[in-house]
Amino acid sequence: MKNQNIYKILSIREWDEAQKLGYVTTDLDKKDGFIHFSNANQLAASLDLYFSDHEEVILLLPNMKKIASNLKYELTDSDSKRKGFFGHLYGDFMVEDIKKSWKIKRGAFKLPQSILLEAEFV
Image (cartoon, rainbow, N blue to C red; front, side):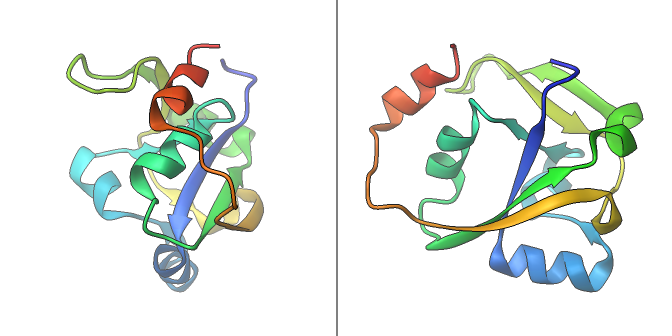
């Protein structure tokens, strides 16, 4: 897990705010006390669960070396429908710590949520 890339998904509004503030923040991250990330296997389900009402989002790849000291991989809560370890950043995720960003648009094909969640176990 430690050498694996992780990604942050933001709404366009959250991305605009991050660029103004100089750091990434979301309501969910504030509530939970850490910055949520998904690995490549978890991205499709994260998009489906949390961004289904967005036509486009921003996908961020952090510079893993810059965030490594505050990054923990933690198992999801037992009451969560998702299972597995997710990257959680305990500290600020600065815009300057972003290695690459993409604007992604909703695609034409949609897999059922149960299949997206199954993909996380591969």
